[in-house]
Length: 390
Image (tube, rainbow, N blue to C red; front, side, top):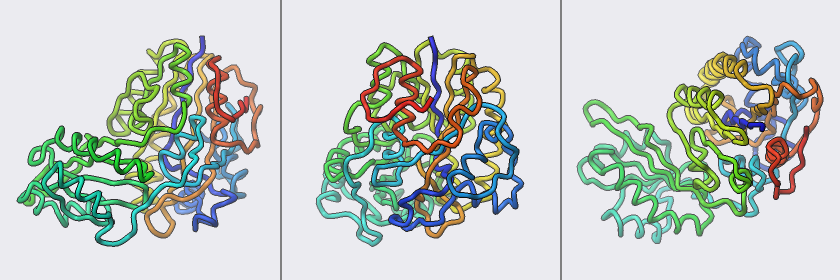
C-alpha cells in the first residue's frame, strides 16, 4: 500500500491571487520578495528541482532564479475561502472550504466585549491587557503586573484569535489550558477561529520568554476533512506541529510537536516508520511565526535554505510509492506593510517516483484539490468537491 505526506511550509505564498486586492494585498508575494531581497541568491536546490521557481513564475510572472525543474511535478493553488488565516488554509487543503466569515476583534483597547471578559473573570478572577497587541511586547508591558496579581493577559492580533498569556509557574500551565478550554465555546460561537494558550517563563529581572507549550483550541471544521476520510477508511493520520490543534484532533491518530528543527526529525521518523495507508500531515510554522509576522525577509530566507537542506535526505529515503506534497496555507510577505498574513496563491510541489515528470506542470488548481489527490493516492473515498490533479 501507499503512504502520503502533506507538508505545509506555513505562509510560503507565491503571489498572484486573483482576489488579492479585496484583501488589500495586491502585489504581495512572499517567495518573490524574499528572492528580491536576496538579489536572487536563495539556495533551495531540492524544492527548486520540484518546480518551486516554475510555480512562482506561473503564479506571479516573476522570473525564477533557478534552472527548470528536473524532478517531480508542480502546480499553483488558489483558495476560495474568504480568509487568509491558518484554519481556512489548512481545512481547505484538507478538502473543506470555510462556509462562514471569521470574526476579528478591532484594533483598539479595550478590544473585547464585556461578556468575554466576564467569562475570563469567572474562571480566573480577572484579567489584564484586553488589547490588540503582539506577543512579546504584551509580555513586556504586562508581565510584571501578571507576576504580582496572577491574572492572565488577554490580547488579540490581526488573526481571528483570542490569546491568553500566563506564566507556567505563577499561573500554572494546566490551569491556563483549562481556562482556554472553558471559554473557547463562547469565542467559537462568535466564529473566532482559535483560543490560544500562550505560556511563558522567566522573571522581570531576567526577562520573559514564551515556551513551546502553546496550545490552540480551534473551532471544529464544518464537515469531515481528509484526516477523517483516511481514518474512517482504516488508515492512521500522524500530525506534526500544530496540525492536531488546527483540526481539534478530529481524524488525527497522534500528533508530535516541537520547534521546526524537532519537527523535521519527526518527519524523518515518519518516513522511516509510518505504516502503509497512512497520512503524515505536517506544519512548519516558524516561517510564519518568527519571520513573516516580524517582517524579517533575511530570517525567512535563512529558514527556507535550512528547510531545503534538511529535506534533501528525507526525499532520498522516500519509498517509490510515497506521495509527498509540499505546499502552503496562505502568504505572509515579510516585505509587506503591517504584520498580517497576505492573500496569495501557493506552490504545490509533488515528489513521487511513479509520477511522470511534468505531468501536471502549469496547472492552476484549488486548495481542496490537494485533499482529493491525497485521497486518490491512498485509495480512500473523498467527500469534498475537489478533484485529483494527478
